[in-house]
Amino acid sequence: MRMPEMNKVYVLNPHYHLRHDIHRVALFSSTGTDTDCSRNWHTFIHPLQAVMLSFFTYDRPLQTTLPLLCDFFCRSKEEMIKWVSDFIDNPTPIYTSSQQGEIYFPKRILIEAEKAGKALRFDRLQANSFVWKKLDLTTRRLYSGPLLLTFMLTNQCVTHCKYCYADTSTQIKSPLTTQRMMELIKEASDLQVQQVNLIGGEIFLHKDWKIILKELVKRGIAPEFISTKMPVTQKLLQDVQETGYQGIVQISLDAIHSEILTASLGVNGNYAKEMLHGLQLLDDSGLNYQISSVLTNYNCQVNVLAELLHELSHLKHIRDWRIIPASNSIYKEYNVFSHLKPTKAQITKVFNQIRPLLTQVSFPVILGKEVTDKNYQDTWGGSRCFKGSECSALTTHMFILPDGKVTVCEQLYWHPQFIIGNVTTQSLKEVWHSPQALHLCSLSRQDINKESPCRECRLFEDCFSYQNRCWSDIIKAYGKDCWDFPDPRCCFAPAMKNKLSYD
Image (cartoon, rainbow, N blue to C red):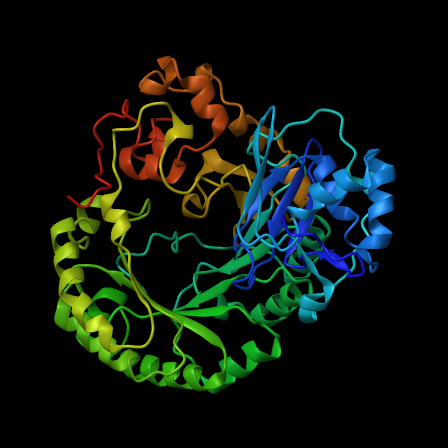
């Protein structure tokens, strides 16, 4: 244990935030957190631990803070130094134990104020702001409201991708107004959300995207990245820069063959040339950017990817290139989509063929093979035992559609079973605690169709209460009317009507 220096000012790392969540405190990282911190962090900690951290949100040396901690916790100086020292400049995440399980903390929780740089701030948090009555460190759903928010600004696009999973056919008669969006952004900021994502369709087709993004930047809750298939122009880059956005611009480009792009995206013959010109402008702009390619039977060939790689190799500031196999869509007929979807053997072959060429470029290339390795119908123990990232629907995330209706997941869009409110007339908190949302969070066996194996499953209560069933995968696999079927990963899941695997 390294002894802290008493004359130094230690602060709660400005890349981390504390949010009182009624029965616990959420500890989370900012978007765009630097590499010296834990990125995309979100855990629940004991309110008393939050109180301890709150003492380090003032501009004062440890020799002043320590007696205050001793008085509050009724502990000796030696005990408090021992406790606090573990949190100062810790190089890796740490944990403490409680009756409700282990409590995890990110790396470098407390740091020297002089090392905080431009992000330094003193929030002057009050110890009594973390009062609680009933401790709950295990429930995944936040009590106070969503931690993550997504605005689908529009479902209009500049392309007509045959593999697109989005609902681009629904006609928006009354779009959510920009004024209302600004009010919701303020509420989100007051609620202490981690970030607000912006997606489309094509976000740059929304007439006020610049105003919206600028407001998110100002409030420190801008998206980590924004994605576009629109050819970049100098005017567009200038507009992005004027918002102050420091995140990543993701350019979606699947190939440079005009024939392939015309067939798969429905674009004109100049699209590839315009995209490459835009990439060069972006490379010269100083903005952070990455490339994303969706792998289909149109471009799952080494020569197609190699030609795109050759063009990308001329760029000097590309962050990385991601190649991700196309995944099923609720809104595309499976019989049609299945002809676009490459097999696992095809994907493995093309990745093996392209891999030797990747040593010739200076940027990382991420081959998304893990989706082909996902196992189905083999997991025992219910949703808490599913491998991979946990579902954020109804636990941390809220998705706002272009007309103001709110759903629980991006890929469910206007599916009526999952519409939990409407922000044209409701606040974020009201939607989060709406009867529809609470009902979906507490489904009973009687809410489940008799045709679903879940209705009689002995794991029902634990599986459904943990809320880690992927609603979109369920509907993709079994159909829109079978939303209450097992998650396809479950060992009790029936044979899929529409296969999600790449076999």
